[in-house]
Length: 267
Image: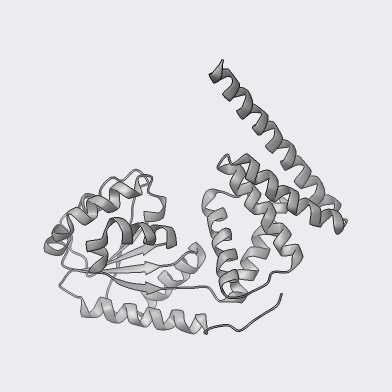
């Protein structure tokens, strides 16, 4: 890997973000405030949550939104009941199925948040949710403070290497969440000017192919698989060649099924 300059000490920055968050929670006691916590990685989020509970003098209540939730305000009311916690931390927004409706409705009842939730609300989001939040809940987002948490470069590289090795070994089965984090890690490294080693890039091509296959984007999956296979053939890595060939065969089979279904619809 060609390690170009690291723009900042991200581990130190994360600690600074935590201290900013603690101050915001403390100063917002007895009044509504919205604090959006931007983080793209579940493991990093878990570490920051544990650290927050250690350093915050204010007790923080936690709720997780169900994927089927339709309105943010109503769900918070249902989960809290008559309780008014010193602070509330909300998880699960990235898994909500109808996220557009949830954000739009939250913006429409923003005054209800301010009148009835007299405590700081901490809302975890990833980049995808944050972009939708800015677009669909503009007025509510204008009230918010955004605090960011990011992984240092070496942790991102280790994350990509570990997950790709585990997936190739069959120890874990990638889901949409994991594929999204892997793609985000690749993008983050690219944005920092990092050049991945050829073997790791080939592993990522395989993972991107798996992600496309999960979303039934078969042509794109085959393209990624073929790029990955080319590297492992040059490296004479027979085991990974075999894994790629099995997945390529599955993709061609799925492609054939789709074409057959389309032909039946036309006839």
